[in-house]
Image (cartoon, rainbow, N blue to C red; front, side, top):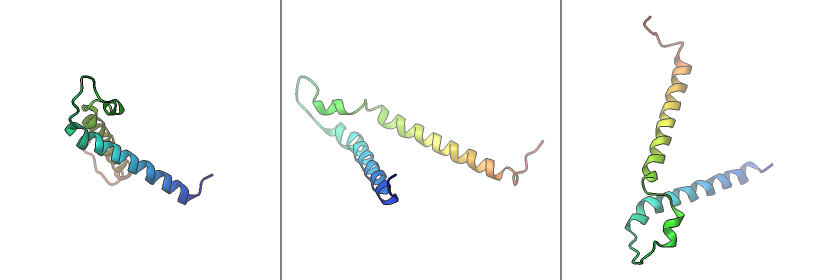
Length: 83
């Protein structure tokens, strides 16, 4: 089993990698002008641009929905519902 420090470094490296991949995909790739008859190999590394906004939106909705359900579940005794 990995130590907590090694696991933390692994999680941090994965997080930074995903962050830089996403930033490059959203902020740099649209402004790259490549003059060639066929697409560059770099475009093959990334999904279509529409997913750059759909994926975070879905994660945001799931996060907010999960937080809301968690809050309602733990506060249901203190909430007074009209019956």
